[in-house]
Image 1 (cartoon, rainbow, N blue to C red):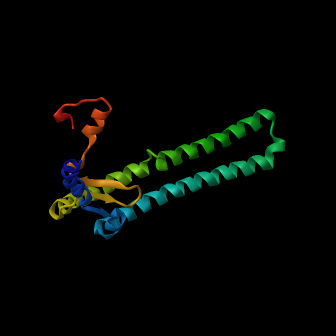
Image 2 (cartoon, rainbow, N blue to C red; image 1 turned 90 degrees about the vertical axis):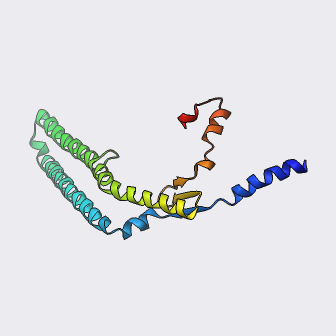
Length: 173
């Protein structure tokens, strides 16, 4: 039993000696001079869209007040027609908000497009530092923890696939 333990010891020591580092990409971004301009540009775009949304809301409120003030004078058909107009304006406003700020909205696409070059520069710098300083893993602690760099020797994807009964070619991973 002792010889088996001695054989496992170097592997356990290697695992225990992994060098792990982290970055905070939010802090790094704040220090990149171009980021301020990009952030200001995004804020201006968002502010313009918010003003349009506010104008839509003012129009909706005006239509509602007009409807409430004159409702008694309307025939049932005109009442329904005016209510449909108000409902349509509300739907248009909601669609506009979703188109601009929704998960696949213009704001997030614009943000991704403008920030992608900076994020790529950061990632390239992380890889250079990790390789130069011998890190096994580097993760980003901003937001969700995300590994930015890992030495391939710690990749157990093939082992997990084989455990699942899935065998892949050497080139597949």
